[in-house]
Length: 259
Image (tube, rainbow, N blue to C red; front, side, top):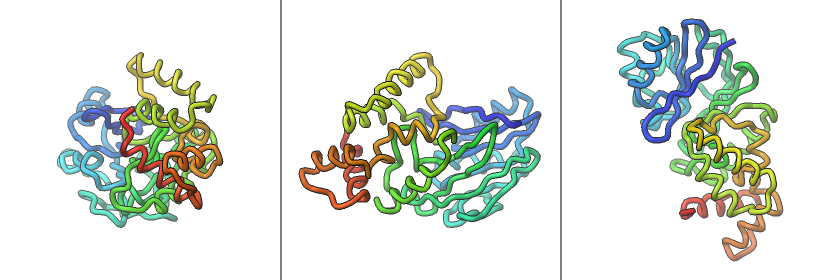
């Protein structure tokens, strides 16, 4: 079965390498240099490029990789992706050449207008969700609305508990500090803070998490719950009519958070 390996890039990005034998695909290669270094180090041949959205820190390395490797580029249909050969939207499915790994596509817009996720099985259920769902957090609303993001996150939250969540950045500890401000008495959250802090102190990635962990500790997935909505209302200083309003308040609160 293929294995998934993190390739750190920039200050906090992860490029994900999916490898089996001597073949490898990469997810969201914002920088070609660390990918080429890893491929050379491990004697791997690139077989595909996968992109969740158009931001340069996720696709900036694609042109240079294509100079070296003539491979398919899978990306969202509604965004401009360098060298894209397969334009994808919800309902589509792909098989990664040489790896035999299959993914189905979910539309999860709001961080960007055409953002997609890749859901499949790589030694168990996985989702590559780019910058929509983060470990203990979610992406900023650069090109969409709070309602779109809430529906995107709710869609991801329906994935099985053991789904491993591969997002694009190492933001976990900062996100957990905000989550604790929202839900200081959440026992699962406090246990996760201790666990992930120890992980980072060892210099290890906190990504992936699991969907079970996200549902138990991520305030943005929990915006409809009474205790989280109450915290959002206390911050807003007014009643909030529904889950979307609760989510929107949490997202604006996180934008201002300096904890």
